[in-house]
Length: 168
Image 1 (cartoon, rainbow, N blue to C red):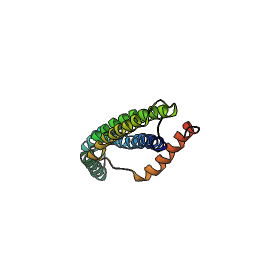
Image 2: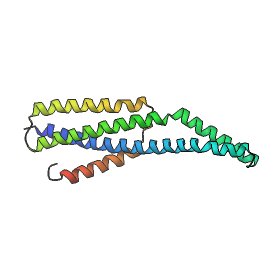
Image 3: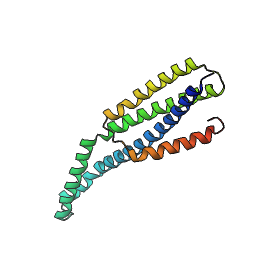
């Protein structure tokens, strides 16, 4: 059996893990959308360039296409969306696994099949895994979305409380 303090800590950490999954899922969706958009624009841009070279378009269109293509290439060069998407995907997978481990720990608490010492060891282990899983995000220059955090944390709490309302 665990103490009330340990029980509350596990509950809070489980909520946070759920929020992390949602947060990184949304960041991944955002960056993947940008990445696909930029890659599509780069794929389509030679068509625009060839139209300009064959003089099927007026000068202002040729100039505009050149500027647009330059901007797209510049964005691709500066942002490195491919790396960001890769890092966010890996982070999301890890956070999802960690969320499941928090839920498993919570279920052990609820069934009285874990003692306080073992639970605290697992808490330390999972918190360390979370740090490792999320540490690569800042190194990949992923832009945070603070406006999402409050909304996502509330959503995660609502879902978890709905799932565990008789237990929390």
